[in-house]
Structure formats: structure tokens, C-alpha cells
Image (cartoon, rainbow, N blue to C red):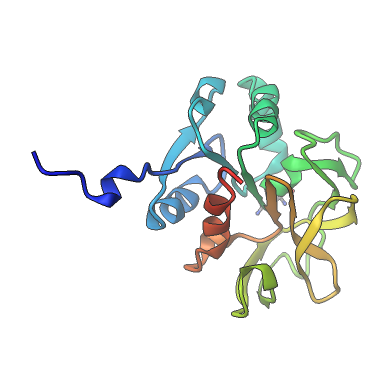
Amino acid sequence: MAAPSPIDRAPRSRVGILALQGDVREHADAIREIGGEPVSVRLPRDLVGLDALILPGGESTTMRNLIDRYGLREPIRAFADGGAPILGTCAGMILLAARIANGDEPVLGLLDVTVRRNAYGRQLDSFEADLSVPALGAEPLHGVFIRAPVVSELGGGVEVLARDADERPIAVRQGNILATAFHPELTSDRRVHRLLLEMIGQ
Ligand code: GLN
């Protein structure tokens, strides 16, 4: 029998993607592209054995209802407490936030920020912008914003990775929690997903 190649020996990171609603497939493709194994998460038992988790974009009100219907709120919080990295994009950032400015109750409360939903208003419903993200290198990151939130208040331990043209935080990290107001899964730049994989075991 042939000796396993180094690639066979390196375990592939298993990355859960909350698959209740939203742009699940795009995140799965991104994870596959960088050598990870995407796993759909619909029930608490789907979290077992995962190395990381992604909360995709979509509609946070719908996702909030489904998270509660499937009993996922406490299991996801416990998963985060175990230290595994979590990436929330757009609606996913709203799910992670400790406070929501528009008066909604927080969902997971894992990220010490206040977010404002649909912060760019009707005129700028959707737009794209090149962002400076020094933590990901000198090359600008192309951000796709779709009815995006912004961070309106930052807690003490939260690192800002990128800001919009008005200097409002739109990518943040706090320990094992990473969140972007934009959609890194909708472009071909994989640096945000790579960062999530790099955070495994840190
Ligand atoms: N506006 C949506 C919300 O408030 C988020 C939009 C998105 O994820 N693209 O939940």
C-alpha cells in the first residue's frame, strides 16, 4: 500500500454553514475552493465535530425565527464558547451582535457591538466598494453590500478590520468571532474565508 501523501494526512477543516436561509451555496463554494469541507447546519447535532461555522447573509429576521424553531441558539453559543471561529456576513453579523440599534432583541450576542440594520438606506440599497483591510494585506478587498448593516458602537475588545467611506466599521474581529457587513462569498477573493480557517486552533 502506498504511503499517504502529505495532503492525505492533513485533515481538511470542516466548516459548518448555517443552512436555514440565505446565500449558503456561495459560502460552501468558497470553503471548498480553499481546501475546506463545507457542512450544512440545520440542527444542533450538525455542529458536532465542526472546526468553524459561517452565518451567511440573508434576512436576519427570518434566520432569527428559524434559529429558535430548530433550537440552535444555545448550541451555537456553546460552540462559540468552545473557541471555534465563527464568521458572520451581513445578516450573519446582525445575528452575532450583542445589540441591535433598531430595537430588535439580539440573537446570539457573541460580538460586543451595536449594529444598525439597513444602514445605507434606500438610495444605496446595494453597492460595491474597494476596501482597505490591512489585516488581509495591501491589496484592496472588493466589498459587495446588499441592504447592509454597519457597526454603530464598538465594545472594548473589538478590533476594526475595515471601515466604510464614512469611517464606520464594516469588518470586525473579537477573539474567535469575525464579522463583515459585506459579502466576501460573492467575489472571487478568498482572503476572508482563509482568515477564518487560519483562526482554527488559535
Ligand atoms: N438587511 C438584511 C437584514 O437586516 C441583511 C441583508 C443581507 O444579509 N444581505 O437582515
